[in-house]
Length: 151
Image (tube, rainbow, N blue to C red; front, side, top):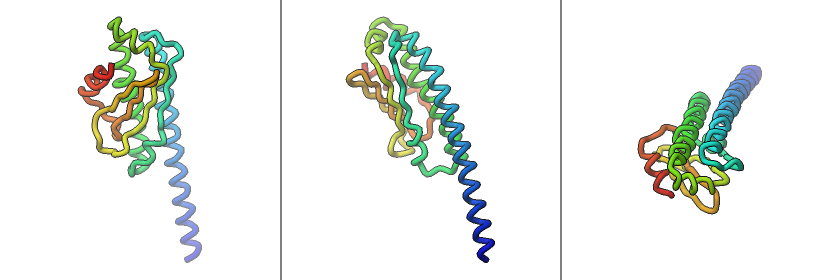
């Protein structure tokens, strides 16, 4: 019986380790995607010192199985690229928005406390753009309107 418990414990720990490695790789890939698009935002909006911070750990607090965490991290990276940075780049095509957005020094990305909350909450103050994303990482047409409304 003890041998069986040891085998089960070892099996579970290996399974958790493998899931952890997949999630770690997904976060690295997601961050690389975000960093690559940040270069385009800097160019389009004229703020070369712009930094981004993504609270990847937030997505680990949702009660999802490991495979879903890995997929959701990919969705989150796409949401940052498309609906945060994409909106910034699009807005910077207008000179007045570009002037305002050029003042942004830091973009802070976090997840909502409730996984099921929809849309992105955008807030801007003192050079920091905060974007609190819906937990599942899915986009919406409404996010552009919410982004434009903060300026």
